[in-house]
Image (tube, rainbow, N blue to C red; front, side, top):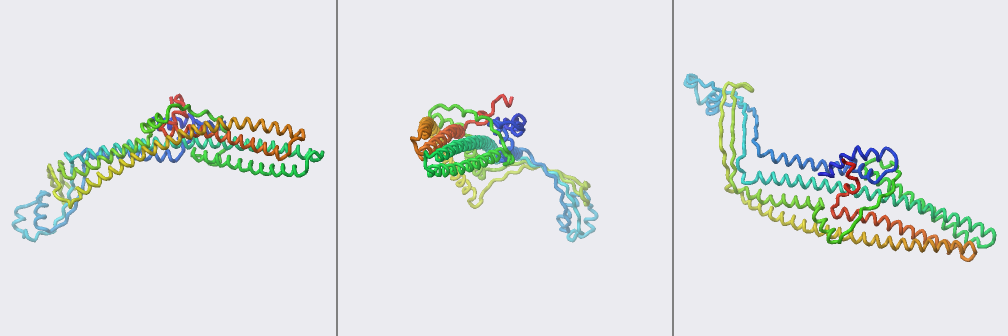
Length: 451
């Protein structure tokens, strides 16, 4: 899994730089998240567990070798006779001179080394190994999806912090403009050009701007904590952000994006792997009707003391077993596997439709964001010019304070709309890339960083 290797390699190349000082870049933020986010570690552990289970399944093809120590104390006539023979302590004279129907108690220790080799299991063993391999592949793909989702969440948090800080700066600038207008109004009121009521209106508007500034600053603090959360570091850590790089270039039709998503989405590919594993369950269930064949070898040491070896014997056996009747449980297992597979197939079909819808929404959201940004830029130019004109007319005594404040509000709102639309274009672009199954880490982190 290439992206997983990337995450490991960039730990020393980028993650350390992200926390060592200097402006935090988007690349460093993502690198740190890939290294420290607990969701990544969890996904990797799950993938490694699935890998181990696949190896465990393969191990069942090999023979098993068990060492057992048995102890038996008995006065059962047949067992005493057999154990004396096995211990190689049987004495014919003692046997005839004693009462064989009422023997003395005999202690026997058996050290047994037993080997079992499966020869044929009706396809059950091979199917289980294949299932484990498919589930291993699915876990690896799910870990890849977690990696890309974490990268996207970190990108989103980084963009949101940049947006929140720019918004806070915009509010602070707007507040400064309002404060200057209040000072100008107070001066005009002293000179008798405007009424005191106009000054009061300006001061009320200034108080509202103070509230907006406080809200914007608090939003920026929360956005920074959210970024630190995604990066897996102390949420109180402060960062200076490097300039936000432009989003990846996007092109192509909606159909091409949907086709790409259905072909490369790791979570969809993982679901298909699980479906393939589920389809094998019916084969496993059918193996219950087929015979099982195994070879067993055994070597025993017998003595009247633990781990003793006064007597020894060995045996090699071929064992064959076939199911004749189990109360219909095998037929029920086959039926259950068939219906479960049909259920999973329906789930996959719905999953694919969900991906189509997700990509369609992301694609149109991006188109809408671009359109809104173009409109917002035009509106911003108009609002800027309107404020300039009204401010000039106010200085000339041709406009009321309320008209000037309205123009300020219009400009502020136009700036906010442009800011939000601009960042929406960026986030919508990344969301479309994620929805279509693109490798975000390859986009954010240059290939030369891992070479």
